[in-house]
Image (cartoon, rainbow, N blue to C red; front, top):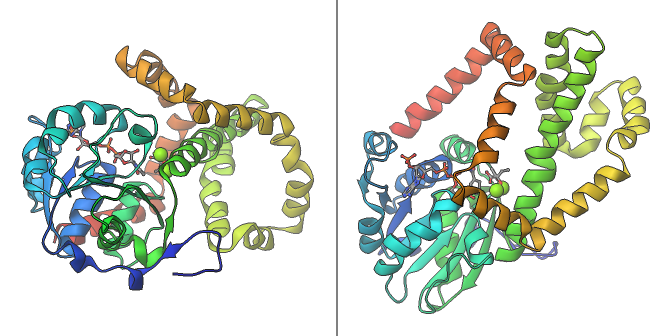
Length: 349
Ligand SMILES: NC(=O)C1=CN([C@@H]2O[C@H](COP(=O)(O)OP(=O)(O)OC[C@H]3O[C@@H](n4cnc5c(N)ncnc54)[C@H](OP(=O)(O)O)[C@@H]3O)[C@@H](O)[C@H]2O)C=CC1
Ligand SMILES: CC[C@](O)(C(C)=O)C(=O)O
Ligand SMILES: [Mg+2]
Ligand SMILES: [Mg+2]
């Protein structure tokens, strides 16, 4: 733990996986986060049971990975610690039908994202602990980092502590999936939800793909080749972001040419200008006042018409076609794939 920051950060020395020695952890879902948590907890010596609905396509994979799989209701009944790692939109229904009837006093109900608790879609009984361990990473990288002996930063929050042990148990879980190797930051459900949804919309997923597409389209419309535009606006972005990840903006500015540095510093704010900042503030407000979540719930109730349309348009964008062809041609794709396979092989071992 350190007191140099505005919030607590917990590391390996602050957590003890053996806190979970007498518990069974039910991991509900075996998707992006679910497979990573279940496999890493299992490797860390925690007793894990995976809960998947009848007919689930993930069932064979989880069983082939050597895990015990049962239904969500049965997993919740067996466990004293229930980690809810199914899509946010199905959680309220699964909670009502499979989890809530099987919760006992003193159990832990845990999330990797606080949406359903914060926006009151799930209202747990008062006699259970409610916690959150939210890795700040896509699940597949959480697992890859764990297998490689590295850690993934995560957020940690306690919403309800009836046992008095909620924090110790959640930190034990965080250690079991490798998060305390990198650092786990204490927060609240509200802060996690609002910052996470804003971040994925404005910067990480929505903002960056939109920036990339606008850059790509600007070059292609001006007559440059789509392949050049792909390398310039998408492929090289990873390499630039890798430098920012390692040493902040300074390391990136240091590594690029003076021409790029002057051009970027003098032009960047013209591209992402004050109107973008105003748009970001609007998007944040829609998250804070619940408008986005209401829209998302209604979208699901209607069968996801807009979501499907947006996905289709994204899939059909020229940059995706060009990228698919280019990635097939180049050696680095093979290297990345074989690295992934070796991580999976080790994970399966
Ligand atoms: N994706 C990420 O990296 C991150 C996700 N989170 C949070 O983690 C949670 C899980 O997200 P994510 O990992 O993306 O989820 P996924 O979409 O990857 O979860 C899919 C899994 O859930 C199963 N599933 C789907 N519906 C049901 C159901 N009705 N009952 C039981 N199992 C079901 C699927 O089974 P099948 O496909 O076989 O039907 C599959 O195993 C969410 O709260 C999310 O916000 C937090 C941080 C990052
Ligand atoms: C950035 C998207 C994310 O918030 C994540 C991987 O952290 C998610 O919800 O998947
Ligand atoms: Mg996130
Ligand atoms: Mg998210």
